[in-house]
Amino acid sequence: MSARNQNFISKPQVEGGPCDYPDALFQELHIFHPSPALQQLTGLLSETPVDLKKLGQAAQGDPTLAAEAVRFCNSSLFGLSRPISTLEQAVVATDADIVRALLLTCWLAKLTSHRVTAPESRVFWKHSLLVARVSRCINDWAGLAQPEKAFLAGLLHDVGTLPFLTLLSRVAPPGKQNLHENLTESIDFQRLHFRTDHCELGERLCTILNFPLLLAEVVSRHHQRIDFPSGFPLLSVVSCAEAIAQFHLLYTNQELTEEAIVTFLQDTLQVWLPGQTHPARLALLAVLKTDLLADLRDHGQSTRGGPHDSLLSTEVHSQAHGEADANGYSPGE
Image 1: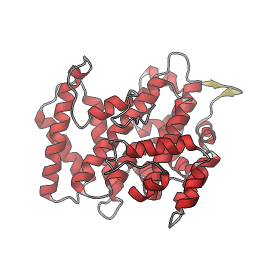
Image 2 (image 1 turned 90 degrees about the horizontal axis):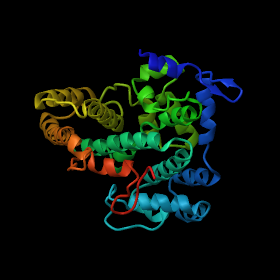
Image 3 (image 1 turned 180 degrees about the vertical axis):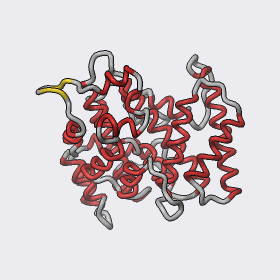
Image 4 (image 1 turned 135 degrees about the vertical axis):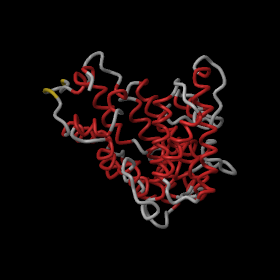
């Protein structure tokens, strides 16, 4: 381990003294307790069937949050056949769990925008959006889950990182503000130095915020290899997408042969999606190979303003930097 990281994880000072891990991180979860309006909305969306009249009335408790969720639902990320204008219509057009996840995403983005530095927020949402889009791409070919749920599970898979970022944004020593560089080395690094990890924190956060069960499973277990298909298909999809996103991060701006990329993708698909038929795996491999090759090769041009049009980057790049999509929504804004 580098001296830089050893310095970073030495107990930083906060009011009353140095942090004690993991207690300081568990205590940090208190800032994520839902507002009364969010609590009421997610509670109603947890019921079967959803009382749409009560949902509409509850939306008046935080009309800004409701409007943001509606705008998110209308974005090109979801591709609705016609625009919707209320949460009730969103439930009918998608389903209750999707609307619940939309509300939680908007609420978390707003909460952390005031507690995490803008550069760190962009890094977090850029990675989250990348995993979301790759998850949806994989799911489109594998057909394992509802497309919107695959996207949202990818988008929210790392929410357990947020308590790290909010705490360390306040207490990190001067000059140690590149938090993601220190946090994302490995889950083992987190366990060793913070005595917890973003999966455990994410599981607690999902309980606090009343996450849909399938999404909570992804948040808490996306670093665990599971026995597909007897496990959770959505978890397999997001875990596979996470591995591809990490590969993309590690090898951007590096010269890689097409053979090396194909070998990586074949191994990753075999590990996380072993239940796929050979033709289905070949079709998915072709799509991922094309986009990963294009993205890794064009990345240098994109940073100079050149073309950047692959699946892996176009929408991720614009939205993670606060630029709205065609219908005006950016999760990190």
